[in-house]
Length: 445
Ligand SMILES: NC(=O)c1ccc[n+]([C@@H]2O[C@H](COP(=O)([O-])OP(=O)(O)OC[C@H]3O[C@@H](n4cnc5c(N)ncnc54)[C@H](O)[C@@H]3O)[C@@H](O)[C@H]2O)c1
Ligand SMILES: O=c1ccn([C@@H]2O[C@H](COP(=O)(O)OP(=O)(O)O[C@H]3O[C@H](CO)[C@@H](O)[C@H](O)[C@H]3O)[C@@H](O)[C@H]2O)c(=O)[nH]1
Image 1 (cartoon, rainbow, N blue to C red):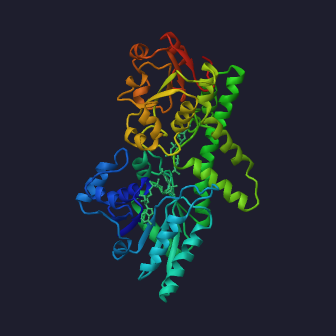
Image 2 (cartoon, helix red, strand yellow; image 1 turned 45 degrees about the horizontal axis):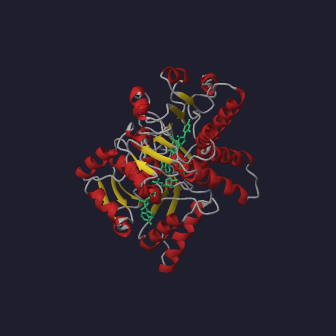
Image 3 (tube, rainbow, N blue to C red; image 1 turned 90 degrees about the vertical axis):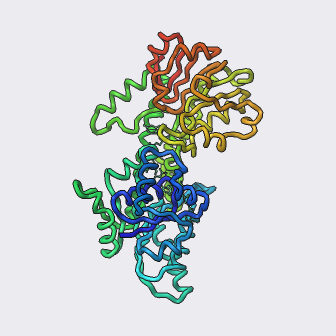
């Protein structure tokens, strides 16, 4: 079986490589010629554990190919996965430009029945728009070809993308025709051998399932962040509360870690898009509005704690940041809380030294160029170099090398032994025994 995957970002590349690993022949298409050239050489543009080996092996074994030409790729297959970006538009809606561009190109090159599978995260009703765009192009060519549009949203997490794709909790397939459903059943057969993971439903139901899943997870995070803020007011330790509620199996421990807000390319944009969808139906999404607002405030929480400790004017002070990626295991800095904090610190007159185990190259592109150029912002060579002469260390991303640091080396490097723990990684008593002042999120220090 031969499939085409359009878009070689986090989702497209992982999808293509994992399907190839399962024995399918896959052609991956991207309009970014440099990316395609690099992928052909086995150079992976993103940091994703296990992906490089998977790509190299499957390219070498002839099951995985890369091209910039969708028309060429379409000639060898009748199954086209769309996995291009759906970023936030200015009003918070999902920008469908890339998805619809691909749909049009499919319509311009279709020669026989095909199944078009939407893997990008798209609002309810997008499959209808994809269908209409393809139909319009076919009409322009005077062609009457049949095709089906399926929704197959992706639930992988960055940093664990290959593992998530290979062993998904569930595979959602929204198909309105039995012919398309059967194609999807065959494609995913290897993933269903030991446990039936695929749930079939209507296309609109599948589109909504993706947003509901992300909104639920974002709600859990904003909920615990709100409880943590309340714990700060009441002199309660949120870590005891988290353990206390998480051990109730109905609540569980996942996605109730308080911190400096959720980031990444999905939760912020998808919650916003769902809010936009709701408003379009004249529906006021009270809970989603609150989830979003809490997160906006939460991404300022470290800055607020820093100014509460040092005063509003931070000129003359310097801060050492540990972690720049939006979460551990990735070099992705889209919507990273570190960016919000760095901008606020610089605006308040502070100097910043920062270090991340894998995101340094991305950081050079994403962080304020002027501050990098004039030295107000320094990207340090290692976690201890990031603390040279600083007034406090701020832990933003909970990478493993930050968990048990060399406290003596930290104290030697720092001007003042103060730790702001944006991920509640440390035990306040242990930190205090090591001679540091400790500020966490909702912690009793
Ligand atoms: N990143 C994640 O963890 C994740 C997880 C689940 C779902 N999603 C969703 O999957 C979709 C893709 O996300 P991503 O993070 O992989 O995006 P990305 O930005 O990393 O990659 C998108 C790729 O599509 C390419 N592209 C754009 N237009 C194209 C076209 N016309 N033809 C061919 N290629 C084109 C771009 O060059 C880019 O390489 C989004 O809708 C996202 O919400 C993302
Ligand atoms: O208890 C928690 C869990 C996560 N986070 C933060 O939430 C954000 C998102 O984390 P995570 O969900 O692990 O990463 P993503 O790669 O963004 O994955 C989410 O978004 C993807 C894109 O839609 C979905 O496919 C995944 O199922 C969904 O988990 C990060 O900033 C985390 O630091 C917390 O603050 N507390």
